[in-house]
Length: 130
Picture (cartoon, rainbow, N blue to C red):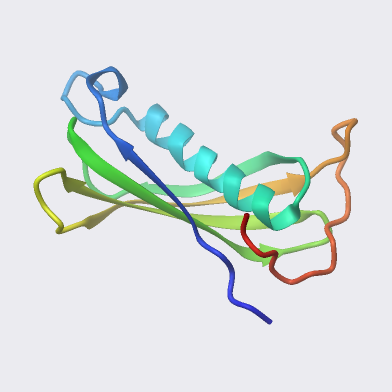
């Protein structure tokens, strides 16, 4: 069995994504994590997917405006129609190569047909990324 492919998204945090403290607003962080989970699950399933739930999202440290946020998402479990995607976020100032973990969470994604009903995943353990 091949190792799961990792999807990486990199974002610069802009002022419109921030809260009144000048750091990434939690709702925007969740949206970015969900986007990474969606892409990883879509690549794995090779079909439409939807989010069924998010599980324990940890906000380890604030992310300042102007920082680079790198999100890595990978499918860590595959069921009949569902997948668990782990997303880890690391941040660093643009002027530094030193990153630190700031976000971590798991998302349950489900493969669906054209009517939005769960559909079985193909039997391949891990799909090749596109």
